Each structure stands twice: as structure tokens, then as C-alpha cells.
Image (cartoon, rainbow, N blue to C red; front, side, top):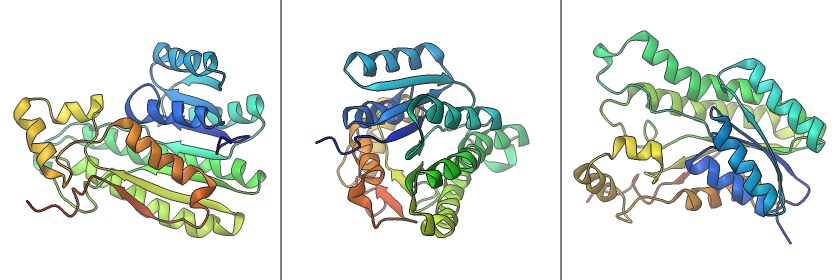
Amino acid sequence: MTILANKVAIVTGASTGIGYATAKLFAREGAAVVVAARRQKELDDLADSINAEGGQALALAGDVGNEDFAKALVDKAISHFGGLDIAFNNAAILGAMGPVPEMSKTDWNQVIATNLTSAFLGAKYQLPAMAARKGGSLIFTSTFVGYTAGMPGMAAYAASKAGLIGLTQVLASEHGPQNIRVNALLPGGTDTPAGREFANTPEALAFVHNLHALKRMATPDEIAQSALYLASDASSFTTGSAMLVDGGVSINRV
């Protein structure tokens, strides 16, 4: 039996990488999915692929930092699929990298808006929809950067992603009585287009691999499996957690 049967999920950042892999996995496990990202063609291709495989998917392109778009995603889940049970708020950017004294306020604000404010906006509309279904699972993609390690040049990214953990803890406390679980997923280095922005030379890639105890990067499918755990009833007593899925980067010192 598929473990997300009769569930409805929103997945943001779904056009590529972790979001793409997770949307496909959720659909294979029985969930109807609303997939979101900026790029309409890639989203349409994803939805068509899911539907062709016998799943249910609806694509909606837009900016996750826009409140109207956050509301529209929930409205689509309700109008097309009858409600909302799972939200995987995964959309993010690395943004401008460099020392803080050299960073513009515009660059800082862009990263905070995309990575943190978007999560607030998503939760604002997702939580009432889940409460109407008597429960649900809200998941944010954070990272080990800014949680177990500080990496030079990544201040805005680290701050935005660390902020998600604080948001996770408060929302888990607030909405636990409604049977809504809220967790943050903290991947290590993952072989995605965003990950390759950082590891963009053979030397940089080798450096990133060596940071991990497993001496490699994750595949998006591996991270998707952890998102599936948090979305499913297998994690029914898990809430408020910062779940490391980082290949041992947080503990590796050799």
C-alpha cells in the first residue's frame, strides 16, 4: 500500500533537485501534489510526467516570496484535490556570497525573502488548511550551514536557513494540539544545480565530498526519502525537530 494514499501535498522548489525528486516520490506513494516553482515549462513537464505515470499533479508557477502566490497554492490544493495534508516548503536560493561588509542590503533581503519569509507566508495559509483536515505535516528545507557549521561567505544563506529552525520550533509548539507536525530537514551537500553553484570546479567538488563522513554528496532522491518519512505517519511522534540528513558533515573532522 502506498504510504501517502489519499493525502494532498504542496511541494515548492519542485522544478529541479530535491523538490523535483520529492514531488515524484510523494506522487508515487499516492499523494496528489501541487508543484510550485518559478519556471512554468519545467513544472508542466513534471506534472505531465506524474500524471502519465498514473499520479495526480497540478503545476502553478510563481514567486514563493509573494503572499498572493502562497495563498493561491493552498487554494489550488483545496479546490482541485479537496484539502491539504502535507507541505514541503523547499524553495531556496544561495544568493550572493561574500563577506558581510561587502554585501548589499538588496542581496541580503533577496535571500531572506526567498528562504525565510516565503516559509512564513506558506505556513500562514497551509496551517489553517491542515487544521481543517484535523492534522498534517509541515516541512521546511533548512541546512547544516548556520546550524552545525559556519561557512565563510554564506551569511545570508546561513541566517535564513537557521531562521527556519526557530520557525519550526515555534510552529510545532503552537500547532501540536491540532495534530499538525512541523519539522525542518537539514541536508548536507546534495548533487543539485544549486549545489553545483558552490562546488563548481573539480577541486571544489572534492573539497565538498571530503567534508562528509561518507565522502560524497547526497542524491536528491536520498533527501526525498527523508522528506517522505517526515510527511508520512511513520514520523507520527516527530515534531519540532531539526533532522540532519547530512552524510555526517556535522560530525566529520577528518
